[in-house]
Length: 282
Image 1 (cartoon, one colour):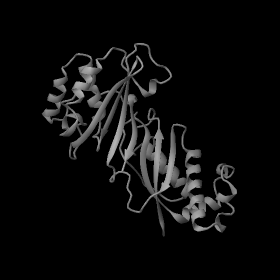
Image 2 (cartoon, rainbow, N blue to C red):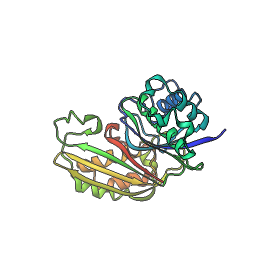
Image 3 (cartoon, rainbow, N blue to C red):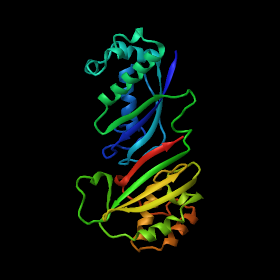
Image 4 (tube, rainbow, N blue to C red):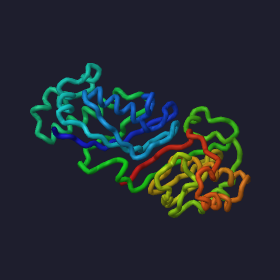
């Protein structure tokens, strides 16, 4: 049985989900939704691997996932698509697919799966890109770097349109103090102080850059770039940077928290709503 390895770019608004990773007792995760739909469409179990396990309430514009599906299941999907999908597929993708050259059949299979996924997924999850990958590709284990963005609104009046994608902080922050504090966090360090208490694997990571800037008068944007981020790491770093920006602790104190290398040392966790996984690189 030939298996096709796919690489997908996934977008989602994480507000109503329990995070990326599937969990016992609930199907309300991004991974769970994708696996359930793929199994229904292809009539076979499919395991989906994500580049990162975003927390409950965290969003993504550039999450990467990989999964393998039997080619015969793709052929069957083309030959007998679900009733609601038939009108969305062109003749080349269905009735005449068997007469196409191999490259044409592959393109038809890929387009049919891409169309089916976006047709049946909830409105707050989308596949923005779907391509065939090499057999060796794995979304999680081959990542080289990630980019996360955190957005903070300092205006006390809520932004009702974008409220699900912001930390509605509502008070002034000193960006220069935040930048000074962020300098303590860049480089290769043991980030044990900035991870969830249940973290068991290595806590050494490289944060190559933290860019902090204002957008207009009311929004502060923090862009984090690194080779990988621990559970809660970006939210904990943001929480401590905000403490510095608010004047409740010195910029140097953030470096002192890092130096403790002790889980729980960073005690201020920014809300999940302001965080978005922007891009994964390989």
